[in-house]
Amino acid sequence: MQGRADAVRRRMIGIIAIVLLASAAALWIWPLDVDWHEPLKAACSRLGPCMAVLWLAYPEVKRLPPWLLATIPVLIVVLAVRPRWFLIALPIVIALAVLRPKKPPA
Image (cartoon, rainbow, N blue to C red; front, side, top):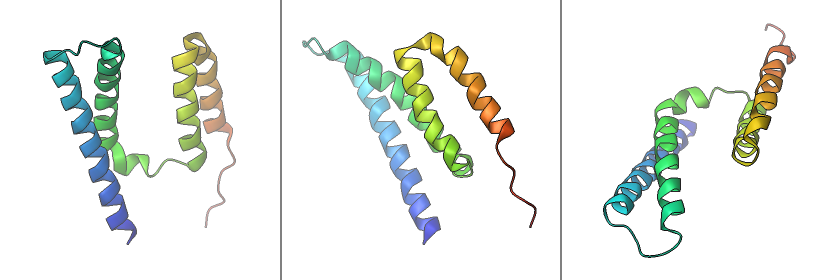
């Protein structure tokens, strides 16, 4: 059952990527006459390729440790709000990854 759920998730990520990329292309070809056109086009242009990369890397992303999956969105928010803090946050995450407790061999 888990394999089917993963296949559905991956398919949905791919569909979202296609919709975002198509929206970005449509907004570039047919610009809207509203003030929120440019931010919408920029968001679709940035998130579409990110979702496409996530779709390609989904089997590997599933293998990431849970604490790292919680850290990645925090790093993205830090990068968006305070780009210079990323230079501090990235080494901290690398140190956490290196210094985390290892599982004893079974």
